[in-house]
Every structure is written in structure tokens, then in C-alpha cells.
Length: 98
Image 1: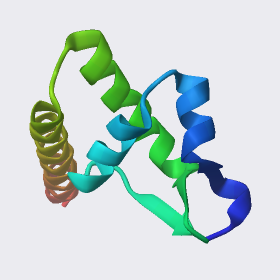
Image 2: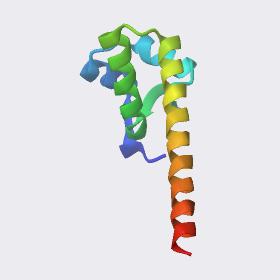
Image 3: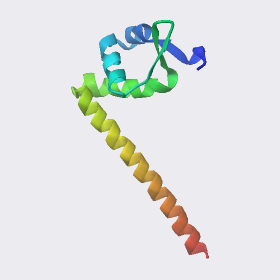
């Protein structure tokens, strides 16, 4: 992983005004992935969107970690179903053209 795409967790917490323990809890529950380099924890730029969304759920809506996990699971299911629907529509359009 390119170190330019990594942010130190402590710095991220300072910028986003959240506790390190919150980010560690998200990581322990598989909601975000942290990268450990030389005993320092980092978060990738790709994971920031998930982290920011979790912060909104947790601090803005008072949803606990387990609730965030359920929400992420449901959002993944919705995305999968939307993709299946898109594929089915494309196949249907191809059949209509014949």
C-alpha cells in the first residue's frame, strides 16, 4: 500500500474530533480496515468515506456500533440488488432489440 494514501489514526481522530477507541471499535467489528505499520495504525483514503459515514451514524444519530454494522450490511444488500436489477434490465433490453 502506498504510504501517501495512509493517514495516521491519531491525526485522523484529531481532524474529525473522534476518539481513537471509536475507530478501534469500528476496526474490531470489521466496519473499517486499519493498516499497522511499525506499531502505528493508519487508515487508507479509501476507508475515510466509510469512517465519515460511521461517525454520522454514531455521533449524529446515536446509532451504536452493532446498528452501524446492520446498516452497512443492508446498504451492501441494496447495492447488490441494484446491480442485479441493472443486469436484468440490460438483458431485457437486448431481448427487446431482437
